[in-house]
Amino acid sequence: MDGLNDSVVSEFVLLGLSSSWETKVFLILIFSSIYLGILGNLFIFFLVIFDSHLHSPMYFLLANLSLIDVGLSSTTVPKMIRDLLNDYKIISFQSCMTQICFIHIMGGVEMVLLIAMAFDRYTAICKPLHYLNIMNPKICVSFVIAGWVTGVIHAMSQLAFIINLPFCGPNEVDSFYCDFPRIIKLACTDGDKFEFIIAANSGFMSMSTFFLLILSYIFILVIVWKRSSGDLSKAFVTLSAHITVVVRFFTPCMFLYVWPFPTSSIDKYLFIADFAITPVLNPAIYTLRNKDIKVAIKRLGKQGHYVKFC
Image (cartoon, one colour):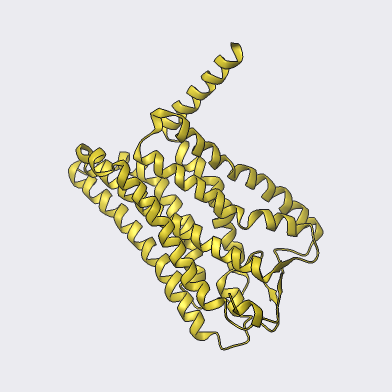
């Protein structure tokens, strides 16, 4: 952290999303409502914990994904809402580095969890008789631990490069949050090699994980197609939620990290999907067609009614 002492810049100015007061009011209402919806992930998390009927590998992974969605959104959305109320949006150098770190840790964990959920669906659909033996509690916990280890290594390996860069001005970030591409642009040094490192790390991780997931779902559908004489309807319904989440989550990541670093501001609007839209939609995507979750909610409602009656 010695690099902090060498930096003239002690804070960054976030330009945010809009300068129009009417638009700001509209965005405050929208994102406040969205963030309340994101907290619905906590409902799924606690529902899985307290309902013994949901103590299975799939719901264990879903509960962890719900918790990570809340964490990922909480790194940016509350500050974004607060900044919409202020004309001068600042973030200290230390807070900016912390925000970057948490964004990439949570993003790394979510990628591993999505891989784990794809493996879970492969096992459930293609090897149902061995499902509980393969997806045992030890394996499920190992996936979660691997996610956190991957996230921390992924974030720290990039932070190690940027933390010691000299920042002597300017300090305006054309976004509502801090991230490596925008901050590196502000460093008083040739950032080409650092851009390459970030693209090679985050870009490769995002793109390879995305294609691995898509190929795994295609592989599952091909196996089902061969076994069921071309009837893919049931398998596709089962996998559609997972595919939707994967596409929504990885599209902004690949746009920002795989291609050369953007010079336009379109990436900040794309990342609203990752920080706000996808987390609020995940509970609906995973639960609307899920019979077990619906039954668990009804069971919870009956228990609440019984307690009230007593």
